[in-house]
Structure formats: structure tokens, C-alpha cells
Image 1: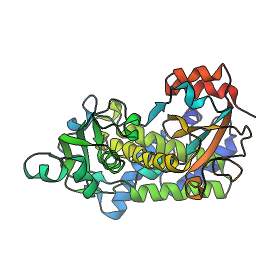
Image 2 (image 1 turned 45 degrees about the vertical axis):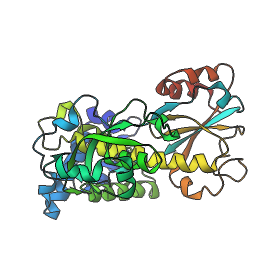
Image 3 (image 1 turned 90 degrees about the vertical axis):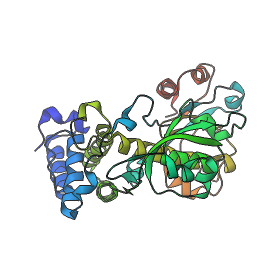
Length: 348
């Protein structure tokens, strides 16, 4: 069973010993690996176990080097953004926060690099040169690409990527599809790419659903701790000597999640009458004049998104917060600080 010293690592503080022991038994029954160590290490053991059973361990062998993906400035980033124009939030008395459900876990289905990567050169330039190339083709390859944007054309989607110039494949595809104009000046990609973590993701998702269905909150905490920390470990400098040190995989997953959020924002921009005022990672803050939390942007009573049933499957209401003279000042802060301070004004 899990040593008490590790309970905090798994998010199990506040649970009784019997609840923890029961969660551990369920965890080991579902996954076939013991929860005796830290969550990230357990998640990596599960990845190896799944590929060992499938006879596909070759797919998780390391490439010749991860240098192109671990260099400074090449790490993928979630979307952090805030609308600093006072006129944007002035008409609203509240903001409602919406978390995207298991966004990184679901993004683990993305294509990941297998084998050795290649540098963009020679004939490969014929396919990946411009945003138009990316709009016309759907390249099922993992890779990282340096983009130079056309500054004379600044579509709405550009505001969400800041000063970034290096992007993984899912974000390049999303930016091109949503109207950004750019040329690719450098790139490193895997001719062999595969959804390496798909079976792992499916098993984790299935067990996460079971924890909800059978009302096993301690098990749910353990599962979330495992998958979130596993993604972190893939790109951690503390893991550089392990064969599963894959900053390219981590970057591909983060940018897959961010790319899907960009497409969600495009839908909201088209259909939502109230604006998105801030974004912190996978949480959207949307203007509202309805203070009660149970009125959501997906509710017919809300003068906002119509026909939002599909988006409602992906987002959950996290909270509603009052906008007043004090809380409006938070729009001048960084998105992380905005998300932290706005909690003081939650409507209970």
C-alpha cells in the first residue's frame, strides 16, 4: 500500500486510511501497476507496461537526441491571455469561469514522434513552407516549426500566442486554419509518427469515468495526479537520463490542447454575445450579467451562446465572480495573478 509520506503527492490529504487503501486497491486492479511510488513514475511505468504487452516497446525508444526540442524558447506553452481594455469588461457585473475537462489527457491522443527526427531541408521544404501549405495539407507528423508571421496581417488568433515563434504541429495547423499568415524558416519533424499514448490515454480516461460513476473521489484524485504529473515528467530536466525523457512528446501534447482551445474560441467568437475576457491555461473567463452560478453560457436563460450543447460537454462551470471597482483592477495583472485574485469575489 501507499506510504503516508506519499499521500500529498497523490492529492490524498484529507482522506482516511481506509479510503486511501481502497483507492489503491482499485487503482492497481484497473491499471495493473502498483501505486507505491510517486504519481509521475507510476504513469511512466504504466506506459511501458502497455507497450510491453502490445509488443510495441520500439515505439517508445528515444530518438538520436532531444536537443532540437529542449533548447531555450522551444517549449510549448498553454494559452495565457487577458483583455486589458476596460471597455471590454465595463458592461458586465460578473465573470464566469469555465474549465475545459481533462484537456491535456484528451490531447495525449495526438501524433507523437517515433524513431529518429529529420531537419527540414531539401525536398521537405516543398510541403511545409507556408501557411497555405498547412491549410491545404493535413500532415500527420509530429514536429516543431519556427514561424515568421506576416505582421501586415494580424488576425484575431495571433493575440493568443504572444511572442512565440516555435510551435508544434497541432498549433501550426490551427494557426493556419484560423487565418494566420506565416512562413516556416526551420523545422524538426518525425517522418514516423504515431498516437503512441492513445491506449494509455484510453485506459486512464476509462478509469477516470469509473471513479465518477462509482463515486470514488480518492481514486479520482490518484488518477488525476498520475496523468498530470506524468506529462510534467516527460519534459522535466530531472528526467533527462530516462528513455522516456521526451520534451517533444510533452510539447506536442500541450500544443494539441492549446490548438483545440483555439478552435473552441473560434466557435465562441462566432456564437457568444458575451466576450472571453481572460484565459489561464484551460480556463476561460467570460463576461456575464447573471450572478448565479447555475446560469451558464450554455443555458437558454443566458443571453449568450446558443446551441452550445457540444461545447458544454467539454467545459464545466468553475465559478462566478463579482466585477466591482476593486476586482476590475485585476485585468491589469498577469493572467495567473488575475486567476488567483478574482477568487476573492466568488459568488457563493
